[in-house]
Length: 127
Image (cartoon, rainbow, N blue to C red; front, side):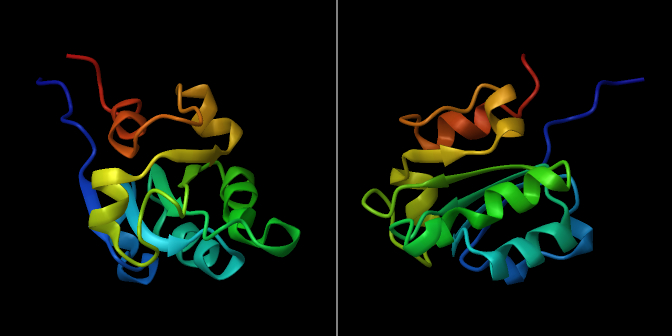
């Protein structure tokens, strides 16, 4: 029996583009990390989701998804709005720099200051 391959990568401008068929994927989106985005991510259940922090906002509204996904056993992080365009997943992947992560992502080695691509590599099997 062969070893399972790496989880699929989904790059979507909006987290609303993910569905149940994407469970277990690595998701890079252009969406903010707010409460409404969390609901869509929880429904789709990606293994790891990258959001935009959207400037964090009042009461850390742009980071709420990190805690909500943590409660559901899902890893997540945000990239800084100063390093990637909000709403553009390709920008998140190409130039995004991690600004915040939940404890599950941190347990995989995701830390602030990593590129989005470096964070994704923490969820791929070692070669």
